[in-house]
Image (cartoon, rainbow, N blue to C red; front, side, top):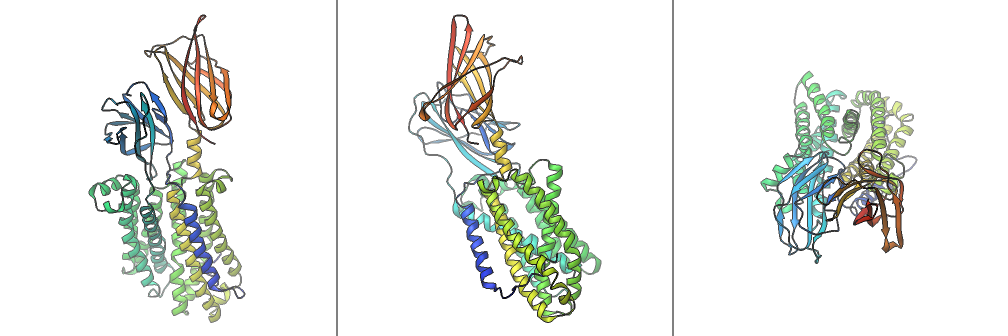
Length: 544
């Protein structure tokens, strides 16, 4: 497939409808992305105290459990009077953040507000409400979407992609595929300069996004310090090196030019593999190499478009060698691009329904539609225009120049879609979060229990129960019964006896929870033949 030979017109098709369609695609990107909350890779699966819990006394500590390991950025407790307390003492245990409570909390409703960053370099935040003693009006807390910051982040990502793919890829094509290197050089230099400016700019935006700070704090030292502590800093560092090597290749002599351009192309793949949704997915040994191959293939393909178009336009006699070399190389490159992209998409999406039900899937469908348009044009014209263009047919060469303009617009639209993925969690991450259990600790003077329901969403689940005395001692219960009810939905108590398999826990197998939402969980603990202790607490069940 010669991806450079897509004519601007096919049987009278004009450029303006295509351009209009691409503008519509950008509008669709905004409609798909902007209404969504700023989710990230890691997802919260449990809090202690649980959201909505009423406590008898002030807790000694708090905990947040996520679907994947995270690093805390900002932890804040909002008191009932609206004042804020920074929580600076915490410990990381696997996927749980254990937070010390430095003071005895007064009666009323409190908000535990958190902002963390996941392994893929994307920040995520939220809040959990709980009451001590009698509840009060909820204090003002929580994060609002900063649309100006989100738009600026999208622009920064878009320009960085343009610099890495069109700039570094363009420098590679000038060094390896073309003999007359003046045509396209200004375009490549411009793309590289855009990338060199966008890389540090995007790093600063990463710091703002991580802290949930407004654009006005862009120059604040803590913003840049926070950004440098994220995995995205490696993407920026390697990306800057790749952009610099590509720029040097444009002025270097002889064989060193090719080596510098090749190193820059490799740097693009390494930069993309350093962080991101796909790079952070498991298995790492497969995902990071696939991202590397996908990124380098994109840079090779898209970077050659503008230089080839300009050579065809201004030096058609010199374009024959360029066209021949590109035509021979593009088939394996597209094969690598398609194969790696398919595997990445399958792992990220997991099931076809997620293509429709999630913002990530809808953006992927939009990208696939643009790629289908691109590949269809290429496959049709590969067999009709390649040979006459190489033979010097000037009319065909003019059609190729117009074609490359359309291809570049489509490529830019695809970059826009990819930049939109920053604001959407992949279905894989949502599935991991959905499979996590929900837990609640029930504490009374007579008895205590840890109740865990796996997975923590509506449907068939397994309940695990550990019972203790009121002072955390062992409790040798004769029988434990789980009772679930949801009066606000008209669901009367569902009673299920628990069994004790021998590992110290009580279990309820084949339990079906029909609806998501807040359920009342009660444990009837038979302590002796004449005494039953009943303890209860609310538990939140997620939707599937």
